[in-house]
Image (tube, rainbow, N blue to C red; front, side, top):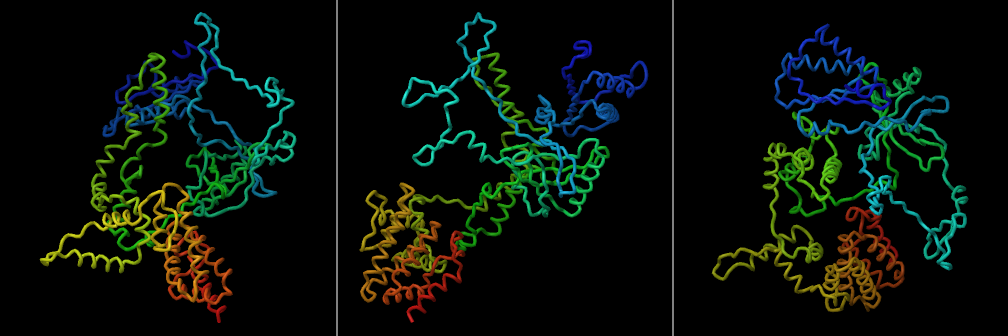
Length: 599
C-alpha cells in the first residue's frame, strides 16, 4: 500500500505495527512464512521503509507455540535490519513505546583522541542522551483580514536605538557600542576589544590522566551524556579503542578529558570517559563521556550531625531502621520485581498533556483542560501497587515517630536552644518541677508540658515588640536573648551580636578592680552560645582576639581572661562549629598565652 501510494519518493516512510501476536497466521500460497518475511523485507529495504513493531501482552499471559512462532517471525524482520521490535505489558509502556519522531544521530566531534603526543585515536562523538525541551510557541497576529488566504500571521519585532540627548534621532548600527555597568558607571567595550580578549581554544580532545572509578561519584555528572566511538571503517581505531576500554574496565579506571568540540569554541568541557564494553560481535567497544563540574559548580551543604544533639533528641535504633526502610522503598527497581517507570517506555507527561490539549483546542477553541488520562496518572502519581505492597513499612514509620503539638514553638525557639546546658541539668530541672507539682494531700499532679510552660514564660519575659533593640544594665543577658528572638527582619541576629559586643567591651574596660567581671562573664557565655547556634563563630573569635590585643597591657584585663580560661569559656573551635578555623588546641593555647604574658 505504501509503495503504490508514494512510489519512489525521497521522503522517509515508516510503518507502525501494534499487535498482541497471539493468533495463528495462515500459510502463504507459495513457500514458507519465513520466505514471505524475506520478500517483504527485501521490498522494504529497496524502498527505504522502516517498521516499528510493538507487541502488547499483559503480564500473566501464558506463552504457547503460536506466540513463539509469531515472535520468531517478527524478530526475523529485526534481523533483516528493517524493523525494531519492542514488547510492553502495560498501557503506560505502550504509550511510551509510540515514538512520535526519530532523531537521527549527528556527530558533535570528529577528530583525534589525543592520549599523548605520539598516540592518537580517530574517534567520533555523538550525543547519547538529549534533553527534551518544550516546543517553542510563536506569536500569532490576527490583524490580517479573513479573506486574505496568503497571510502568514507572523509577528516581527524590531528595535530602535535612540540617543538620550536627541530622543527623536535613531542611532545607526555603526555608531553603537555595547556598555557594561561597573558600579554607577557605564564602561563601553567595542567588538574589537572583545575579540582581542576572547578565549579561543584549539579544537581537540586530550586525555589528561586516569582515576579510580570510585573517586568520581555519579552525582557529579552534569548535562547530557555523549558517546565516543571509533571512526567507522578504521580497523586500527577500533582495535585501539577496544584495547584501551578493556584495560580501563579490567583496572576499574576512568579517564579525564579536556574537550573542545569546535574551533574557537567559547568554553572548554572537562569530563570523565567511562568504558562501554560491547556484548554484540558486530558492535565495537566505545566510551561514555560525562561533563564534570568545576569547583564553582559544586555546592556543599553541611548539616549538623545527630551526635551534636542531646541524647534525648537522637534517633533510636527502631527509628533509624524505619527511616532506612522508607528510603529503600523509594527504589524504582526493587529486588524481585520489575523496574517501574523504565525510561525507554515512559513518556514525558508534560509533553503528552500539552499535545493532547493542543489537539483538543484546535477542534474546540473554548474547551477546558480535560481530566488527566489514566496512563499519565500512573506516571505522575504514586503507584498504588507499590504503596499497597509497602504499606507495613509506612505504618511502621508512623508508629516509630511520635508527633506532639508544640504551640508557639517558633517564637521561643532561640531561647530554648540558648537555655540548653546538659542532659544532667535537664534531669535535675525535671525532678525539681515534679517536686513542685506535688499536691498538699501527697498525690502528685501530672506535670504540664514543659515546652508550653517555657513558651509562655519567654513570651512574658521577652515580649517581641518594636522597642526591643537595646541591652540594659538590669539584665543584659535577657535583653540579648530577647533581641535574638525578634525575627521581623534578617538583621536582628547581627544587631544583637553587635550590641552585646559593645556592652561587654564597656564592662571590661570600665571595671574597677574586677567589680564588673561576674556580669561580663555571664555576657561572654551568652554571646558564645549565640554565636555557636547562629553559626557565627568568627564573630566571637575575632571579638575576643581583638579585645585582648587592645587591652593586654592592662593587668586587670589579663586577670579577666584568666577568669575566662578557668571557667572554660574558650574560643569556638571546629568541633563546636564547622565554620570555625580554630582547632581545640589553638583555642586552649590562646588562653595559655594570656597567662604567660601576665607572668
